[in-house]
Image (cartoon, rainbow, N blue to C red; front, side, top):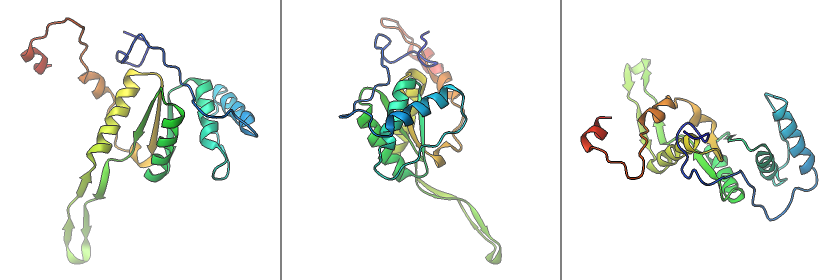
Length: 188
């Protein structure tokens, strides 16, 4: 087993540090903010807040802090729209790392309801976006197999996740040249 994630790494021979690819270096208040974020994390701060107006470089500041810390990172956004924007920005800033998108896969969700006045039951109705579902699985896979992972998620996506151990239990290690019996493999 490797030290990279609970499962075998995708490319065990490739060292992939989290590395920012930006056309400029930290400037203005950014170096101090990066240092404060990193120091706070290393000191065990449970909460930190980075304040700034729109366009002030908060995403870049966080990116440089992530690069310095070299830790898998979860970025939470309050809605899917902001999560999508941050996902694209982090993908540009970390082109050689696993930047993943993890938002609720429902395009539409109507919970079940009961209207007492009319004695009416309304059944649950939903529509799942298959592309977002695929991206969620990609994020889970990256977290299990890589160390250079940044997951951008919406807050609503973290509810009802299920057991991550299910992914590990479904994994099967296969070596190059190994012969597998199809029936035994399917029985696993």
